[in-house]
Each structure stands twice: as C-alpha cells, then as structure tokens.
Length: 418
Image 1 (cartoon, rainbow, N blue to C red):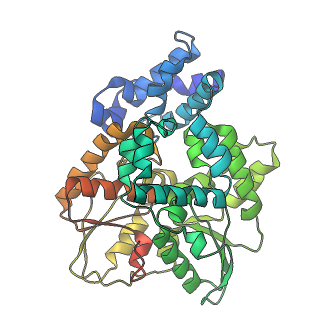
Image 2: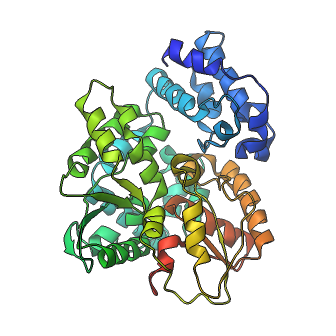
Image 3: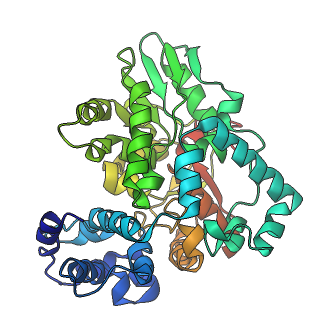
C-alpha cells in the first residue's frame, strides 16, 4: 500500500456508521468487521503496524463485494473499495498468489480460445457429472472452498461460446453510417451466448459495419482479486484492439466491462503512454443500455400483460451512473407494467466469481434481493450484467419463484434467449 496516500484517505473516515445501512455484507451478518468503517479501521492498523500481514487477513480483506454502496452513502466519500483493492494487492505481495489465480489470470483470461476450450471441458464435466466427482475428490479445492456448492449456481453450460458462433471480424450492417466495435465480455461469450446474439443483431441493424472484437478479458476479475499486474497485462493487450481509429464507438452489453474499461487508465502511471491511450479509449466505451436509449430502441418482443422489474448492477448504477435509461426503455413496452424493485441498486451477491469463495455469504445477500423481488409481483426480472443474471436466476430457482431473468437486450429480439 502507498502508506502516505492511503493513510490520508483512511483518515477521512469519521466512523459515523452510515455505511452500515448501505452495506449488503453488514445487513447479512451484522458484523462490524464486515462494514466499511470496520475495514477502514483494519487498514489503518496495518499501516500503523499495530497488526501484522498474515494469512488471517484473507477473510476481512476479501469478503467485501466491492459494490461501492458504502462510498455512495459516505459524506466524505471514502473510496473503501479502491483502498481494499490496494490492500489486497499488498496482501498478495506478502502472502503470495493462489494457484487458481495463476491459472485464471495468466493462462485462461488472456487467451479467448483457451478460455473457450476450458469452458467446453467444464460444460462436458457438468453434463456427465465428472465435475461433481472432481469436487468430491477435492480436485477443485484450489478454485475456492465453496466451489462444490457454487457449481450449482449454473444449471447448465452452453455447448458453444458466442464467438464460436460469430467469429471475430467485420460484418456488414443495415445502418447507413458508422462502424461500431462490439466488446464481448467473458460472461456473455461463455455463459450467455444468447445475449451476444441479440446484441450483435441490434448493432448490425443500427450501424453500417460491426466489428466483433477478439478481445481478452477486460481485467476486472484480476483487479478485484488485487492482482494488479495481471489486470494491467489484460488491459494492455486490449488497448491494441481498442485504439483502432476507424472505430467511433465501442459497445459492450456487460456493465461491469464497460465500467472497468472506462477506468482502465488508473492501471498505468501518467508517464506511461498507455495511460493516455486508455483515457482515449474510455471516451469511446459505451454501455449497451444508454446506447439503446440514445438510438431510440423499442423492445420488439410481445410482453403484453407481463409485469417487469429491473435490477441495477453495481457497475452500472454506481460505476457508470446508468439508472434512468433502462427504466425508460422498459417503460416503452406496450401493454407491459413496469414496477420498481425495492433496493434495486443493492448488490445481489454475484460480484463476478464471489460465490466460489463466499457461497454462504453470497446466498445471504441474495436472499434479501429475492424478498424484494417477491414484493414486486413481477414475472420478468431484467438486468444488464451477465454475473447478475447468473446470480439472480439461481436465487429465483432457490426461492421457487415463477420469474424469468433476462438481459435488457434480449427483449429487442424474439427468440434471443439462451
């Protein structure tokens, strides 16, 4: 950690406790160690060397969802999530990286084809029951102590990734002007190819050319784990693709990817040329929901008589400030009723791969979201983040609710679910 800079930020916490009401982890556990001011106190003790860096810090440093709700409720706006990222990085420096991180961040996420092969193997393992056998034998323990249960979050894995169906390259569109690049997030590519198909079709309808990128992971998973060097490598590899001067817009249907790509310049010091490149790219990054809104998109699927509600992904609402546009789009659906979800911007507990290492806590956070969903009476729950879709669909199944979970873009094309 940068002791002086971090200490100055930490000292701004006045220990008022407003973060308690906003924190999903505190609401689930009631533990002071799980709320922002408790974590800030821990970081202060580390900087002042009143406690030592050791493996016992893993829980309090890594069980935060990084949702940013505490900072939104904080009068001095202490950036707790950013401070924890730096603390996680310091922890990894002292304690060491996990084997799973080395595999994921160094081998799989930098190479989309290798990641697709790994996902295909996982899909076969899930269909045949081999993954359950591996979990029972402890072979997957390196990926998180809760993986055996967390695997049930996904009832099935698609047989093919989106970019195995639609190869990276340039495609002609029906629009009259413009070239748009489609940044394909890992979650859409591997777990929700139907979202990718719907986004691709919409982009082709609106622009003259669509460039489907062969991008690697945006770098957010490595960043969240505190592996800043890996996040920097992933971001740098993408900059080569995203700096294409012929591309006026770079659209993604993953709010988490959009938020991280917008802020990727922080990975590089101001003297590094990549810092300026990342800032230039950030100006072209667009989340699909506001892009659809600006384009005047109207959902085409017949949803008459349906009651619809919307869950705000943390990276959309607090990372990008996107709240109004998806609601206005849903409000345009003829004959459907939109009803606001209580605590719509509260984290669902998805947080990327959070459930792999914090399954029980993730489910406790999810239960509150499901109780709020029940209060709406909605039969269609819409969001704009693949990780949220997975978590919310799991919550619906666990609660036995007759609710369909879909991405916003899937309402624009009949038959685009899957």
